[in-house]
Image (tube, rainbow, N blue to C red; front, side, top):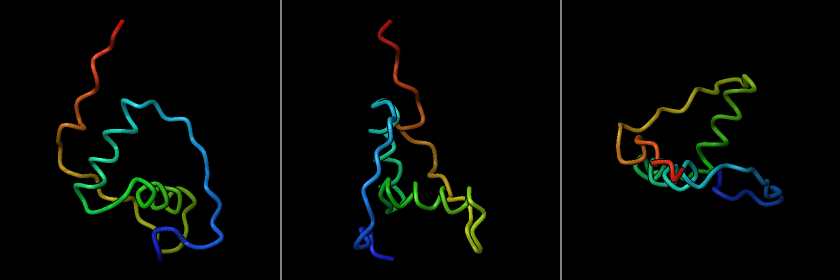
Length: 70
């Protein structure tokens, strides 16, 4: 499947930057994009035939939560 299939509308989600930005690095560590990982998770969540929970990358800098600025 192409990374940006034609006629697939863009979707909006609200995810905090301290999760969204490291998510890109974690996905890239596996040669994936955030969009590809989200699509895999959705297919798995919907129990689509053959769908599997995507593998997580090994621990890395993305594994440590950002420190709160409170």
